[in-house]
Image 1 (cartoon, rainbow, N blue to C red):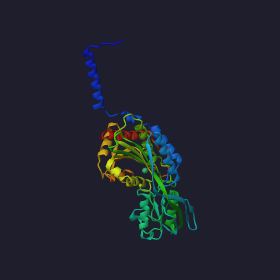
Image 2: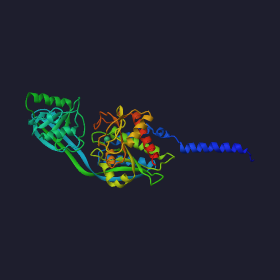
Image 3: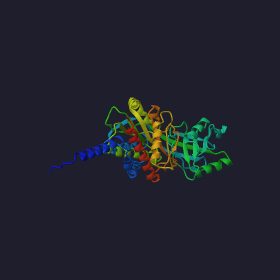
Image 4: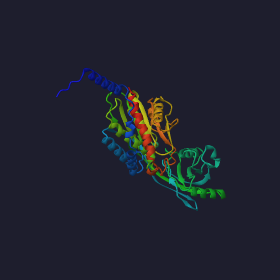
Length: 422
Ligand SMILES: [Zn+2]
């Protein structure tokens, strides 16, 4: 049966439909469902899977197993995945011993990246290890240094500069600790407990103390890899936005916050953005960097291999490193390239009701090589995390709420930044 409508009704209906279509097309509000799709529990499950593998040391088999996990996840979201291999130095701790000659046997931990060494010498108290803390007699001796204030590598290198043969760093709270020097220092270094440190200090106060320190470590040439997941844009003449995080960890712990947290949010963002009906014109790349902890090797290799891509098409780089422990979200970059993406992320965070603080990031994570190529970059980093680079950086420290909030911000930033280009 055909129905006949008065022409005026048809016109009104046509106008209303046109207005709705125009409104949707021209004045479409920002799609707030993007961040709503991000699930903190999904991200948390990735952290659990990565930490279950164990410490993911650059160049080691656990790092490779983690890369496989990330590849499988990315492929399950429909991303095109490339494994980009590169050379990396693998570090192995074969154990260390420390004994007072004619006296007590102590229980040292090798500090990660310490070179091997076998030294018998007097041990000398050297405060916190500032350059002014070293008396002349440190030359040819072993430096006994208290933990705190300076990085462990700074204390060790300051001791080496003062002529010490090795460094023994005692804890500033009860018990011993496991930690990394971040890179190979010129003299051996171990950690001991506050109790062992106090024992040595008491002995030194009474008379000169000779100790024997042995450290055995091994380094070997190996390979690490970046896992690169690509969500191709609908217009390949458009640029690329990168979302990155490193999946390797230090040897002494499972790196739940540093940086399984960043990788987990990156993966959840990839899932969310791959299932969106409105795929962006811009290409989105999700990169899990290997070998960050030994000197940003993964991100630097990526830039070396893809410098033309990054320079020609790089519209933005969002780096997530340690985003799920601590009270305060820091948003910033090094300040050497455009602040456009930093400004954008900060204003988006405010719009989303997320409290944040600005900071000037150091070149100590994977945003640095991108920023050096003038890609607008932003670094999201939750602070403070007292367990960084220790055995205590574990799953139970992760705040799912914080992880979800920061993951939502990263996802929305990537998506919205893509919609602003072109
Ligand atoms: Zn990290």
